[in-house]
Length: 375
Image (cartoon, rainbow, N blue to C red; front, side):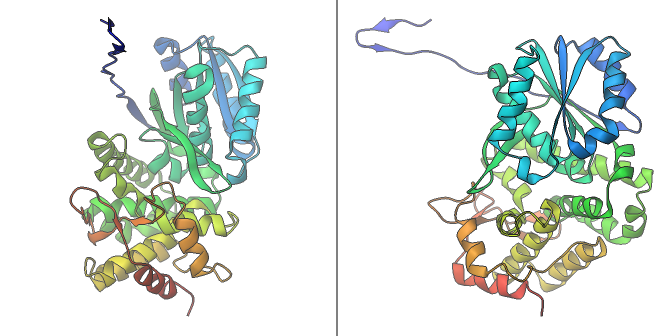
């Protein structure tokens, strides 16, 4: 009980929340989403947030599925692309929601890839001080990574995901039939996070991706379902141990320190997955030079990335100095110094006394960057 004691008072607010949620896997899940939401009763109205590409393909199907169960819904669309992932776009959408009388009794459905999921989740965290949301990822990247774990954010001029919040979804629906309409570039780009999961925690999964890359590139449904389940299992295990990224969850950032910088410096011409693939090679070379990762494993990583059609070299026109400068402003940097997540083998990461990230001398980073270039 709050009580004044002289000139002192303490407000006791011990938090005991359960942020658990279910992930549903399958094909053609939209009708099930409508039925589930009817029973869940998350809100009186549902805002479908999507981008201009995904909206043309799936927003009406999802909207109709909700209408079939007598749920009120509207579609709010933004221009597709990383360039839209900013506070301004979010403010525009939330303004439209407010004009349409969406309030604290509403919920958000994030329909799309990683950009949509990050933005919609961030809006769910701040709109009317927080409303429920559901993730419906439609890309390999989002199904593998960004829809799981509750990290939401937008970009600023200084870097990716610098403004955000932890906001766990109420449910995640992974419908692999939506992967059929992805471009080859986006499909292959999404495989980077999948390969990353193999490197950071599952040796067998890594070699599954190595062995069956042709079937995966053909997008055979059974393989897509298997990959989605294994991705979520790996990420879920990590998130359960460290929901707010204080320790082991940092291993999910493998390849992202240099990757985010390269993505930004490319003017976002490189997809997130393409940049992460290059970043994995930079981090892998750093780990190799420090004696953590053997050369055979580093070569295997490069082979699997290249078999997936991903780049493994830094594009011309992006300087080593610029990459180091941008990494110093990364949200994971400390005291203005970038920290790297490094593998100690395929399927395991160096723990650095439980921190799972370490400073690396700029000379070592520079050598790794120089080695990750077209010869």
